[in-house]
Structure formats: C-alpha cells, structure tokens
Image (cartoon, rainbow, N blue to C red; front, side):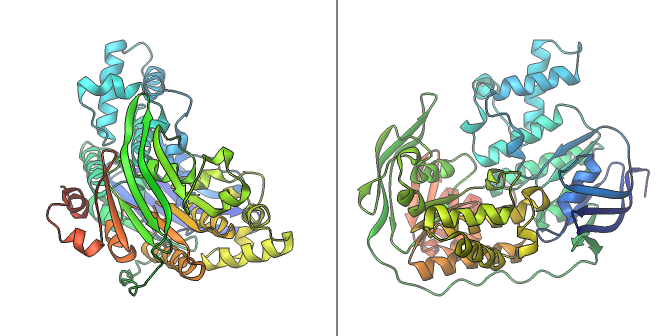
Length: 484
C-alpha cells in the first residue's frame, strides 16, 4: 500500500443523544478508489462528509482525520447543489474562473467546461455546447442534473474526490458512461472515496470495498436474492388518469410530443427510458407541476388543473414522490411532525391520529419513532426518501406517482419500499406509476410498461411481451448489463 491520501482513525459521530458512527478507522491510498457499501442509514454519508470536511447540522464528530491535497465533494442528491436561477454555462464558467484566475481566457474557459462535462459523462457535441450552456438546471432530467453537479466539482481539478452515490438516477447507458469516466480518472491517478449501493459499480471500480452497518465497519455480508415477481392481479378497467395529445415545451423546444396515455384504476404502470427522455416531465404533468402547451389531462374522467389551482381533495388524490424529495423537508421541524401534518391537512385526521398513523407508516418503511423525531439533518438521504413515501401515503392518494424512489438504496431496502407501495395499491385500490432506471424491477413489478424516448411514447405493453420484442430497441439497450 502506498502513501495515504486520507487517514481516518477512531472516527465517531453523534446526533444529539444518538451515536451514529463508532470508531471508524481506514486509509485511502493515493491513486486508488475505496468504496463504502452498506444499507441506507448505516453511516456511509456521515463518513463521506467527514472526509470531505463538510459540517452537517446537528452532527458532532470525534477522532482523527488527516487528508492531503484539494478535496472535491459530490453529495447525495447532488442535483440540489445546482443554482436553479443560473444558466449552467454561467455557473460553470464562474467556477472555472475562480479556480483558474488569470490563466484562462474566454476560449480557454469554454474548452475547460467542455472537458469537465465530458469527464462527468455529459458529452455534448461542440456545435450544441453553447445551446446546452444556456439552459437552466430545471431544463435537464434528474440524471443529467447529477452529472452537471459532478462537472461543477471537477472544475476545481481536485486531487481527492468524495462521491456519494454518483450513479444514482442514471439509466444503464448513462451509468456506464460515468463509470468509464471515473475509471479514466482512476487510471490518471485520481484518488476517490466512493459511496454506492451499486455493487456492480463497486466491483468495476474499487481497489477495496469497506462495508458499513450500524455505524461500524463490518465484514462483507451476502446479498439476498432479488424479489420474486408478484402474483398476477386484476384491476378495474376504468381510466384513473388520461393524457390526450399532451405537448410540453421548454424554451420553445418540445420536450413531450403529442403524448397519449391511460392509467387504469388499480394498475401499476412502469415508465422507463434513458436519462432525459421525458419520464419526469410526464410525471410532473400528472402531478400538476408542469404546464401543458397543448392537449389535456383528465383524472377520473374530469379535467385536472395545475397544482396551484387544485383543491385539497385534488392534491390528496394525486401524490408525487420524486427523486430529490429529501430536499423538500423543512430543516427546523422534525420529520415525524412533517409526515403527520400531511395526514391532518390532506386526509382530515386529528393531530393525534395523524401522528399515530405517521409513526406506523414510517415504521413500515424502516424508520423507528426515535429516528423520526430527529430533524432532517439527523437522517440519511435514503431515510428521508422513505419518509417522503410515508408522507405521500398519509394523504391516502388514489394515484401515487413514484419517480426514482429507490434510487441510491440497497436491494433489500428497495424491495421493502416497493412491497409497501404494492400493499398500499392493493389495499386502497389505488393506481401507481413507477418511474425507474431499474428496468429489471419494472419487468417484475409493473402490469404494463411504457417506454419513453426523446419525449415520445415509443412502446406500450405487457412487460414480458416488450422484453421479448426485438423491435423495442430502447428497452433492450437499458437492459444491457454493460456498455450498449
């Protein structure tokens, strides 16, 4: 083992009276990739933040940590680090200027920006670069925003990268591109501390993998078998949601093109496609968060307005849990209070009943009452994602939209969340839309599958039929285990 870029000795961390890290010790040798794996809430993000020198509210550290060189940090839910009010070209250009004062002219900055975008797996042809740089963060998909956040980190030319779930929310094709770029950085001598639930990514990149559980480093544990497909089920043939000729534009460019779609009552509809295909825009239309340029949205046969014009009953009727939902929690109120408030405001429960139901729902998703009483900073990103699911379920929706709700979670926890959503669908006769880059899970969970590409629905059908249809090229590219 060579010289260490990071040396951690007896690292501990507490959140109030709770101990969340216990005597963590390890080294990250210069020029190597060391990976932290483990279940959500195990303490991986807390370790990564300590190595990066990030102060997390409510967290107190102890022990010794020595690092050398300049550190670049990509946090979990990295897209939240993008400034929504600034075009990405201005943001990247400013960062390049700060880190290369007096050394790069305008043309040099443009070349540097293009390079960091490529390194982040965001390869833009030169003739489209200026158009891309004029866009705002909301004009990109969730996976694209993650890669833009990585590009921001790379503008400083760090010698040590701390990456917390950098492939979260990426389809198989985009994930392969990012992994290839990280592998290139490794071969060029970059030191990386990587947090991931993706064991294939860890196996491809890591010199050494450390397993974290309960705030401790532990021996590797075996992975359970994937979830079995659910039993065939029946549901009503009535349409819970209808999109008719829906077109959505952004900056005069169509991002959904004349989309027709029906979601049956009681149905689980899987939506798949590459990053940027339009999946989240489709979800935001149904949730009322995206204006429609042309076409109509009907829920239970009646026109549904955008969310600002919806009644409480209409808001409760359609609930949306999105990939970056952890950032939707208020920082100065406990998670339990915020989940319970949904039951009061949207389901008409008394405060006591809402709190009791919130405790039960959170426990179903693996968050006990002691954890739920913490402020959001005291929970991991995966725990907050589960709390967002609990919060949506407390509204007792008839239509539940889940946009990458298992992104960045280990397989047992992902299965637990999906099982809970399936149980709710069954018990409440609700309709569910599952948007995910995990296509194999979609094949086993969905009644029907919709494939989105370039803002259009290019295929719809029973999962088994689509996966066996050689003409469904986008789906087969997403199912490819490695590079397409």
